[in-house]
Image (cartoon, rainbow, N blue to C red; front, side):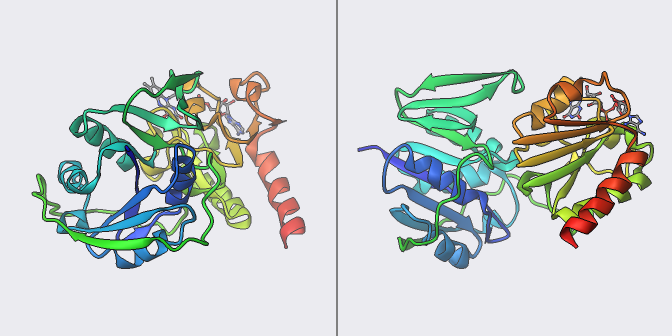
Length: 311
Ligand SMILES: Cc1cc2nc3c(=O)[nH]c(=O)nc-3n(C[C@H](O)[C@H](O)[C@H](O)COP(=O)(O)OP(=O)(O)OC[C@H]3O[C@@H](n4cnc5c(N)ncnc54)[C@H](O)[C@@H]3O)c2cc1C
């Protein structure tokens, strides 16, 4: 019988919450999936993974290559322990790159950004989210699962854990990492996002968005025009076709026109609120709630109301 394998998303030996959603997606394909937890010291992440309900067994895969991302080495290590069958992982940028390599090494088909699984019918967006395609599986596949679509699995499980050590050849070695110091929530993990576009006028005005984000527990995103125009706004904040794909419960677009490439990254948000001074801006065609006003008018009122509501 062909197995169902889940590749956990682990960063610095910490299990990402998105893995619990991948477990739920995997369970729609069949029972007792095998969950592979990669790391240089994967013990605590593996213990956490073993509590996910429905997981059959956990492989704690230890390899020094997992100290930094090298998709060729990671693929080699993972492929050495993953049995044949369907393999699922998160639809992060790392997950997508690894999935592509694993699909080649396993001679499998690949389906990126899966949003629905019904039996062997798998649905995912195509043409930058303008259409959804449903394909039927006739053989083993590698899939990435879009975040915030599947309900996370509960924590009542107690799967067995086996430890496996590998030593894969790194194709690159990290000389230096210059990271932007940011304690802020990443857009790809947030349930609420407030994003600013070129209409914010200056990167300093993003402070207004940070202030509202702090009240809401939200992440701050940006359009590509904002990222390209102001170096203070990092690419990691960009939402859209060439940025991150997000699927929060609430997406607030401020001073963003709603170009098709921006919509590609956020149109599946559950609720979209747009604040734009131009009532004909395309974003209003996709917004559940639209406020035709400048952000200078709208944001102070929003912040004040949130202060009253949330204290
Ligand atoms: C191959 C390709 C890939 C791309 N990928 C991406 C991507 O990943 N993400 C992305 O976002 N874009 C992407 N783009 C760019 C995209 O086409 C748009 O240029 C971009 O999204 C526009 O950003 P914006 O809405 O912030 O700016 P603009 O189009 O300049 O819109 C600014 C908006 O702000 C409003 N505004 C101005 N002042 C105020 C104010 N005071 N208060 C309120 N509203 C105000 C204006 O009415 C306007 O609607 C891509 C383009 C290409 C060709």
